[in-house]
Image 1: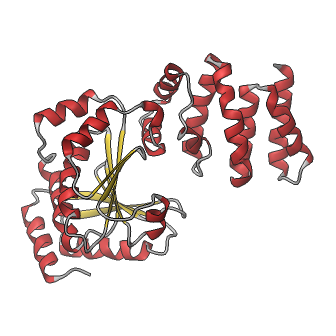
Image 2: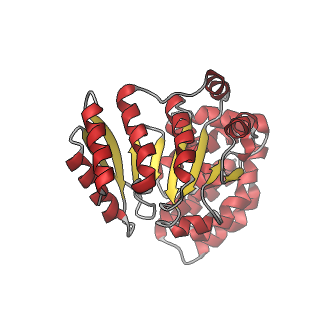
Image 3: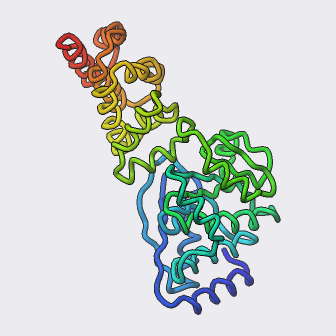
Length: 323
């Protein structure tokens, strides 16, 4: 898989590593899973100090390589992308890459999680420079997550985000830069963005940090359920849904009127989700206790749904009647 130049770069890295390092490989049922598997196998054969920790991911998500807790490659970093990748690997051994004290301070002052998504292409000569700029941000501050996506390898993702050229950098689906990235401008956007506009990945990172109460407080302070939060309430993974439901329960307990905002958006998604997720939506209807949900719950109990889904609807109706 690797060219002679790439082999020399990896062998040099292996010689310079002072200890073994471990990176992750999240495998999935995606058509490109095998090439990620082969990339990691070839990588460890050349660089014996690199270990691969494999884990199963969602069948619907792309495979990805994890470096530390905040850098994710949904790309095969070969060719021009190999040097930034090697810099990140070396940083696992030698410590975070250097950023200016000003940037460090501004990142630390930002109390919101950050998700940067970088779309690249293997033939792009500008992409490696941009990635080299962004990687240190993800390694110096734990709240910054960087996802590198090869838009040619995963065209469906490029289409979803309406990517027309590379490099393109997205910040929480709110801000977009194409071509060269003015780093000061990016840091300014990170520092001043509205929490209401946080993307689903950033909200999920709050839950993964065990901060469900903090996320609930953020929305209660804003007097609004963040739009991307509905993606967590209907997420295909049960742990993510569970964390989001805990948040929703807290909001319902402290501000019932505000929690009622969720009724219509959740019902609009109802027929597009799995039966397990349907049951969770119906459970939330019972917790939110908004009488507008009664007609929808009655439709479910009388409709052509799985028995467990219909049972969840009946239980929600009982809760509403009791409240």
